[in-house]
Image (cartoon, rainbow, N blue to C red; front, side, top):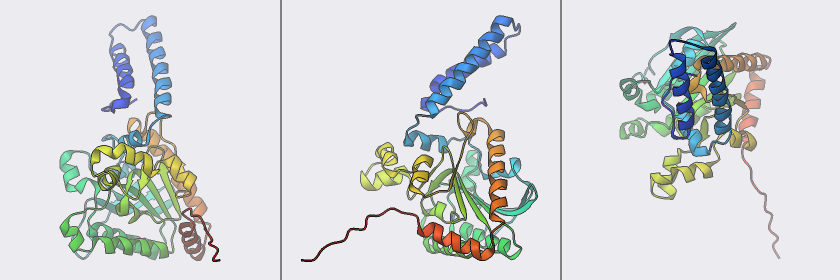
Length: 324
């Protein structure tokens, strides 16, 4: 159990953690104290399991945004070796909201592309809170093409509420560059794995989300719009975000049932923000296992199956009308 600022529904857990900490710091550790600590930890596990098994979609959104949740740079440190960051889009500048670079995971040399939110306020401001500009997506495209040139698999970490919506970004072709990124990813002759590690909002997520395998962490979400954005459009107020979250069906359970994603990666008890190392171990296991499977397919097979995979997404009713 790591130290973290708890969410509203986590208050019972925080109280137990405080009791355990107090007993742990007791100078005289008697047998009775040891037994009480064991009992409290058992109680914490039971309550955590019960609370997290019944989270509402809006509560899952809160977990996905937790300030202690591991970001792309955390996974680069814990999962990969020899990361070499690559900067710039060769057109305008370097976007810190989009990380790109060479890395190694076990025996595989890969290209990593991912959103970065930043941990402190200064870092978050520099990264636009994970909202990439057009130059971020142009950087991602150019580095993915570089990976294709050298036959390197691509791993994308998605964690953004959406692409940056400012006037400058629109003037520099935000919508066009996201569409171009998706098109280029559909044609790349190298394996692509996309993982939603936190927020997966709108076109900002889709811009690096077209892969051979798309996975979502257990308490992440993946949606055409953020709950606040949806509430603002439908109900004209952000205070209806919880209702929007229920309606959007964007949790990992919904997404797998709808066929939008391929896999759900289970998080540690109490969420990824409580145990970065355990989450990283599960992430590494998933990535290496998936890479091994994708490496067996030829480039032509990858492109064909990728195309068919996204063409199959969606459910509709075929209503035939009879003209009398």
